[in-house]
Length: 360
Ligand code: 2P0
Image 1 (cartoon, protein in one colour):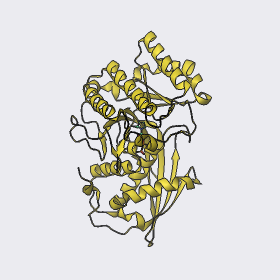
Image 2 (cartoon, rainbow, N blue to C red; image 1 turned 90 degrees about the horizontal axis):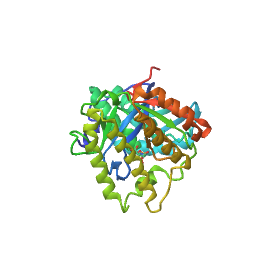
Image 3 (cartoon, helix red, strand yellow; image 1 turned 60 degrees about the vertical axis):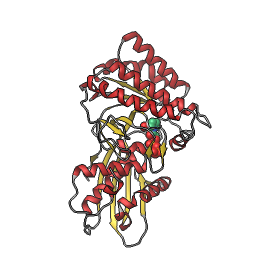
Image 4 (cartoon, rainbow, N blue to C red; image 1 turned 90 degrees about the vertical axis):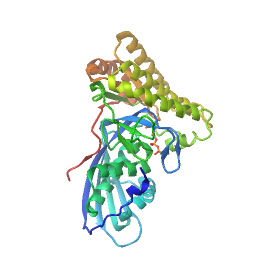
C-alpha cells in the first residue's frame, strides 16, 4: 500500500452547502502502540477491540468559499471550543495532500462525546476518526466514482494522521494496525479488520471502564511515544509486541481465554513499564489502579471467572470479560471495585461495529 493511492485523481464537481454526520467509537488496544516514527508510522503492530458506547458524534457543516486558507469553527456540546483548534488545524494541514478540497469550504464542526468530558478516556481516537470519516464522506460527494471499501480505508488513513490509535476506530470488532509478517495485508498506514477466524467469545467481549482518575494526564501520549526513541528497552519491547501478535492469532481463533488474558495483562504492564523506565521516567497509574488490579486477580483466583484488565495511557482500568459472566463481574464492580473509582464512576461497554453515519 502506497500513500499515493489516497491522493484524489478523480474529477470533482461543485456542491453547495450541506452537512455530514458520523459517530465513531473509542477503542481499547490488546497489543499496544507505544512508539512511532515520523508521519504517524507505528514502531510496532497493534490490535484493538472497537468499543460501542464510548463514542464521538460529529456533524461537519460545510459552506463553499473562495479564499485559499483553512476556515473552521469547532463546537463541543454546542459551545465554541477554541482549545480544539490547534489539533484540528494540524490535522487539516497533514491531510491536505489527500483532501485538497478542504480549503474550498468553511466548516462548522459540531461534536459531542457520549462519555463524560475529561473522564480520562482518550477522546482523540473517537474524535479524530469521526472527523476523518466525515471528510471522506465529503470527498465522496465531491468526487465521482469512489468505492465504499476504499472510502473506509481512506478514513482510517486520514484518522491515523490525526491520532495514531484513531485509525483503529473506523472498523468494528478486532482491528489490526501496523505491518506484521503473519498478517497478510497489514499496514503501517491504515487499520483493518483482523482477517482470520474469530471465536464467538471474542465477538461480544465486554469492557467495563473504571474511572480511577479523571484529571488531566501529567504526560501526554505524544510525549510518551517520543520517549521510546533511545529507550533502553525499546528494541525488546517492539519484538515482544510482534511476538504477542503472533500468539494472539490462534488464541482469538480458538477462544483460549486464559491465554488471551495472559497476553493482554502482560501488554498493559509492559506499556506502563516502558513509561516507568523512560528518560525522564513517569508513572500514570494511581494507587487505586493497583487496588483494582489486585482485586481482579483475587476474584479470578477465587471464582475461576476469566476476567482480566488492561490499561490505556492513564490510571483508568479496563475490565475485560466474556459476555456470559456479565452479572458476576458487574456485581464485583458495583460491590468492590467502584469504591476505587472517582465518584464511584464506571462505564459499561462492549465490542462494537465501528463508525456509522448519523441521520441529520
Ligand atoms: C494504544 N495508546 O495502542 C496505545 C496504548 C495509549 C496506550 O495509542 O500521538 O493518542 O495521537 O498518535 O494514538 C495513545 O496514543 O497517540 C495510544 P498519537 P495516541 O491505544
